[in-house]
Length: 265
Image (cartoon, one colour):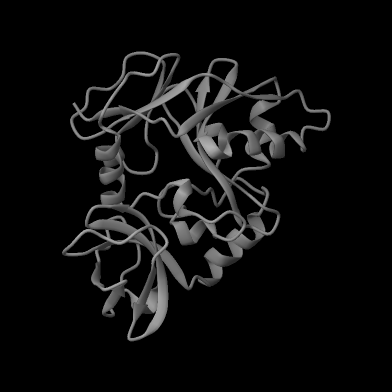
């Protein structure tokens, strides 16, 4: 069964009567859409609209649970706490664990469980008190890279725009809920079509070079390799290079745009 614990994830609990309203004014997606069995994917941005962190929001009774990258958990609690003022909100990193299942994996029957809101093919995610040992993490990474799904490691804090990482096409942004931190630049980029690059899946005939390797086309830098799984990877790539001959280190690359991509070269 393709299921695995996700050791690089932590869970932040948000409690208090103002928890939903508090997050609603700070994150990129509509927090009110998180309810039992339905998670919401959202990001927290700088005031200038640059990426700081992303997370999955689960509703669990009188609290919201944020499934967030381990390296971002403490930072997220610290930064969000600055906006509490008089709101009835408390934030804390918990000892809860995150797991995921995909393909034909049976859905978890314990903990707080919801479908991955990015794509149906992404499977499900669960938050529970106990982590089940698994050797399937590498398989999970291969699966999500093949689907073209970004993880925090693929984004550069205080640099990446949400739309560059395809949050708009993967249900990570609400265009109707109103203002939030960084909303102005995100909306302007969307409505004026200002993007110069996006995160795209790439493949090679041989195992790819390391994360961060520069991608060139006809001698010019056009992108950078991010997550890698053997011969497949993700890369931030300039749009005019999607159909161009690409080289990464000494290897040739091909772009493989997934079906959910709303724009083709």
